[in-house]
Length: 435
Image 1 (cartoon, rainbow, N blue to C red):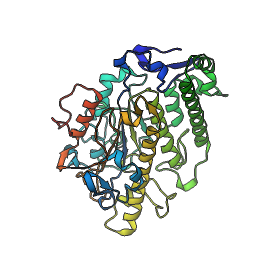
Image 2: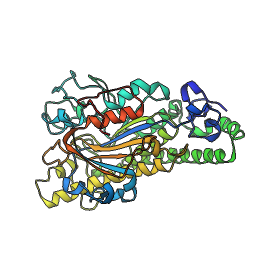
Image 3: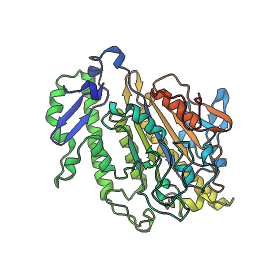
Image 4: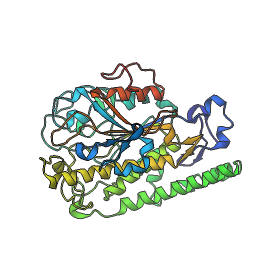
């Protein structure tokens, strides 16, 4: 058995020439550790949807005992109501002025007012995820994971750099972290298999580490052997799905904008693309390859065509400017609901991964958010925010939490940082946690 306590803490890993697979929670490994190091770690994931959400389709009604009844957009989460909390009344006060989109999404995780510039003299702040990464990122192979579906591209001249519209993770006031949009590259980063990408006959990472896997398997108990076999199956299935999605031809005019064809390695099927990225987040958390992930589901002002959804042929951004018209509000709501379904998919994946005395979801805090509410008004008030997971504690989920109007969103980020273990007493414009 190979595992390196100073680096991987609670994980065994498999090595081969050109790849390393960190393994999920194995009881046989955990039992060899001192009791104080057996507790699973806390993770944070933030998924951000562009263009806001129609309040009448988003806002749920309260139910008995502080719970909530699913609205149209939240209906996909009906089976997870006891595990998801809906937050109302939060706002990023530093985004109240500026343009309709970029000045809201760029500071979503920083809580500051960005500098209006179309050049390289960017000014933001360190985002919540990177505050955590700078304190604890050295405990995992990857300090953090930044994902997206769109490359950075200019949309219109708003006086703001296009970097603002496609970035939510910032490691410094003037440095947005580039997000990875190609699933195969993310996979290679997780398993340190970049060398395999240059091999024309690229083998599976499982072939590369097979000898080490066989040695480890002989040392494991029956339950851990079964868990290792399931993990190997999931890794292989993910490899095959990534390869198949990347090879699928673009669907002509329905391809993503502004380019009419996806970049190399980017799945032409948007649904498959998002699903693969959530699979990779789940894999990264299960293997403790990283404990921090941000996923910008699409760049702000996204005009993606959702023709694959009934009644949604047209651009997402155009639908968000619904002007009160039913024929635009309906597809606007349907597209937002589709993104909520992707969030649900991630939650189910994390809940299906056993770890310690619960699941990976139990030990995570997973947020779904948008940087504005009604896209027609570019409203910065009462942002659409969902929170799932217990962060390894006993945080009560399944609630509808109504805060005072324009309560700083940074109070949520501050609370999450403290639950993650960060020594912080304030963040952005928050000097007290939300809970």
